[in-house]
Figure 1 (cartoon, each protein chain N blue to C red):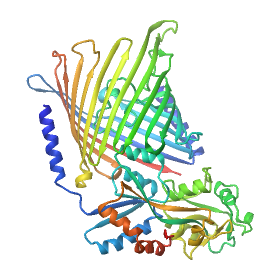
Figure 2 (cartoon, rainbow over the protein chains, first blue to last red; figure 1 turned 180 degrees about the vertical axis):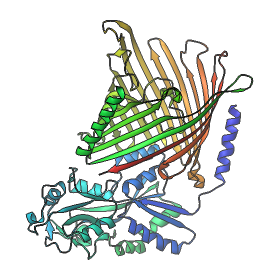
Figure 3 (cartoon, helix red, strand yellow; figure 1 turned 180 degrees about the horizontal axis):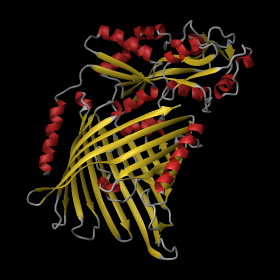
Figure 4 (cartoon, rainbow over the protein chains, first blue to last red; figure 1 turned 30 degrees about the vertical axis):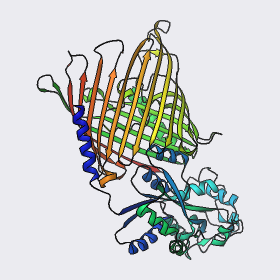
Length: 269
Length: 342
């Protein structure tokens, strides 16, 4: 009986080993990092037609979870991986390797008609926890504040939660949205709204506020005067090799970093 | 009456979590099973041929703050493989506090997970429960408090628990006054290799349900488990050795599982599994051990394993030659879904 099972096992492994994985790279995770990786993958695939890259969103938490379960090759994340996730990955035989590909300024945005143009971190926390509920308390119009946030699987949500809210509870009627684009669209269409976005999503349809007197920009992130800056990451199983290594090297190259800048984010150099 | 109480508790949890929690995750998991068993002394004789749902879990996980969460799980279980209908019982009902001074640590309080061996993170690669659960060494949940934490760099996990020691299934008939103490340690020296062990100590004093002045038994129980897990690319191997000693009577055994994940080789969501168990109820007695082989496949229909189809062949061989060996075929569909309300 044991011999039969051993034989079946050997045959099975041999049979399965005949089928190599094709030239596919799968990526999932942060919607903040998505535009960089999406654009970079298009350019990379033009240069390397035999390689196919699939990029999906879902949020940083989903991307990291997919990597831990071996479902994707690369996880995009707009937050640093957690200790618990590293432990789960190691148990699953995944050796987490981190690559920083860009920097970002978490931008606080309001409707363009809103006269308020500056805010400090304490006031921002008071707005998101419900202590301040009307713009007139901040010298603005007599208008209710509509709080717009990202959902819980988002790395942007976690960074904002940690750096601004210090893990206190959100206002119960806050709108929790699934993507940066959804936040942008809601703030654009709602005069009383306030939201937060990766800097790459900020455009003329919304107004970015100064935080502690500083605008979110490449300069203010590099000279560390902007208070809610962060890095953007790619996580892989071990140091990236082969096609995955080639793709990440491309993002880190001058051409890749130019794509980072074109998508509105802050390149590493 | 019990169902009414559970329904009330469930309703209160829903109301409580909806009002006070920042977000609440709801999840449902159902197993539907066809099970055929054959005895084969000289020829295969069909002795069981059933379709039933052995498990249904409904879970509510409210998150009050980032560092205070709860978990509440109802377990819908078929009694005697569905022959006697079904019942509902509470599986988990605990609060998880991670706002502790020690980083990456937390305290669970209530009807908590039992961190013995692999029972708390066993993911049912085959339809059967984990060895220590199957042989009734421990239950997967118990009333108590547990202090858990992670070592830096994902190097390992530890848990120290004080529990009732009676599990979550026992509700009457006898009263055990003494707590059970559990220590669990897992280390991951490098990605893919996990070494671990747990020890459970309990001074078990059973009193009569009719009169707490009547002592039924007073015994000392010591259970321990050692485990090794190896995960590399498409291959997962795990082995655990379990011992359960009550006074001078020791039962022990081991379980080994090998799994090949074809997803990592051919991008087909298929797994091939073989499990081998050996359990000796009393090492000092003859003719009370058995071996078991389960071999099968799992097909994951949707991403995130939303629907899994399991097909298994199962053979149990008894040391006692007067008992007839059993062969089983199991076809099982597991499906689950969850949603987070913010």
